[in-house]
Image (cartoon, rainbow, N blue to C red; front, side, top):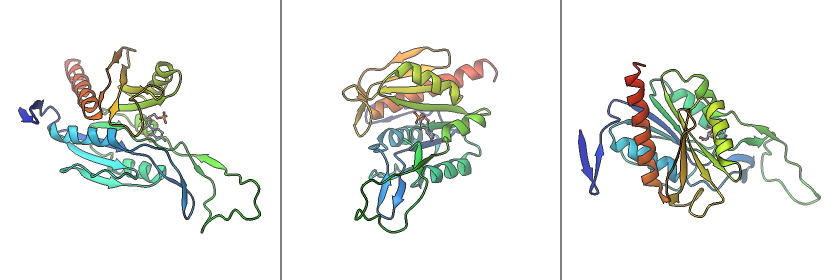
Length: 234
Ligand code: C5P
């Protein structure tokens, strides 16, 4: 079935599929008024959630703090920390066919949370001890089953090598890699220039385009994975 919206023909190729998307940054509290985070706006994940909904999927979007308005027609879950995102993903995972991890999850959180506000008086240095957060995508990769798994890899060096390592380590079907040093790519922008790398090591270089268009490309690739699995009788 095909629909025409904004002059663009889109197929309802995800009808009957359940898609779970993570988006945005996470916030790791240091004290009552401070946190560790990153500049992710959530745009890539929100674009993916909208595109999947338009293609007929049932969509759950789990997002860290952003100013974006959740797309209509999806189940939206807001979280703060990486641990909350991890718990929400595991809770919602039942029946999910496609998991897309677009969130910029903080790798660490402060070991100790200081109640109230840390005062600077009398302190020359302040040492923050950090401990690792759970790797959400890696954990879903362990429970992969029939799910199609897609991750992102934002790098400042060794783009393809690091992306391929993550693809294997997290048991993904493909990974979307972007070079943060390139103009127009990465955090807090409307555009992105990405490479899509699959399990066979094939690399598709996409030109600079809007995150909405990147989302459509990613979902086209999901469609291809579904087709090839069907052809293999998987
Ligand atoms: O941070 P890293 O480069 O390992 O992120 C690669 C992929 O893993 C991304 O898709 C990200 O959303 C996901 N990830 C995650 N949980 C983490 C760290 C990363 O789901 N704690």
